[in-house]
Length: 238
Image (tube, rainbow, N blue to C red):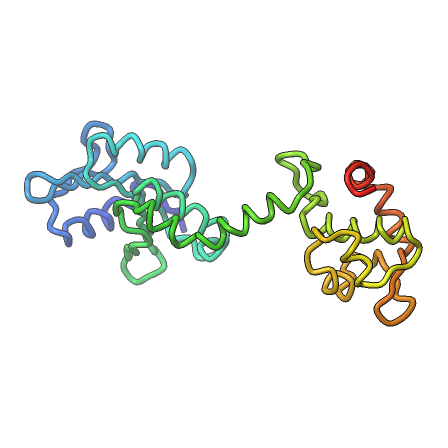
C-alpha cells in the first residue's frame, strides 16, 4: 500500500470546508486550500503530512490575508496524546491557528477538528495560571542566588527545596548535632524545617535521637559538590 501524500489530504479537507458553507478551490495564490464563505470571509488551509515548524510558519503568513487559518495533517494515532503534541497545540492556540487531522484508517477519510481557529484570550489564560505564576515567584525568591546554567538538561538543578536541605546539612556540619527547634532558630528563612528533616529526601541527615539530627556522609559530599552555595551560607549566616 502506497503512503499518504499531501495531495491526499485535499479532498477530505475540501469536503469539510464545503460542509461549513464555503466555496472551495485549491492552490490560489500559493495557498494550498482556500474557502470563501459569504463572499467575504476567507478560510486558508495549509496541507502537510506531519505537523512541523515549516507549516506553522506558512500558516502565520496566511493570517495576513485570511480571516481563519488552519493546518491540516494526517492523523497520527501514536503521538497525539503526548505532552509534546499538547505543547504544540498550546502554541497554535496562542497563534490563533486551527488544526485539522485526517484519519485515513476510517472507511472514508474523516476530518477531525482538533483545534478551532479562534481568537486567543490572553487575559483569560493569565487568570487561569495565577497559581502557577505565584509558584514561580515564590520559587524565584526562595533561591539565594543563581547557581544553575540556563538551558541545562539531564543535570541536577539547585532549587529552593534543595537549597533549604543543603542549608540544614551545613548547619549540622557546623554544630555537630541539632534539634529541629535549634535549626529553625539558626535559620528562620528555611521553610518547613520539620518536613524537610522527616522526609530526608537526599539522605543528607541521620537521626540520633527523637527530634535530633547530625549530617550524614552523603550530606558531607553534598556540601563539597555545592561549594558555591555553601560560601553564600558562610557569608550570610555566620
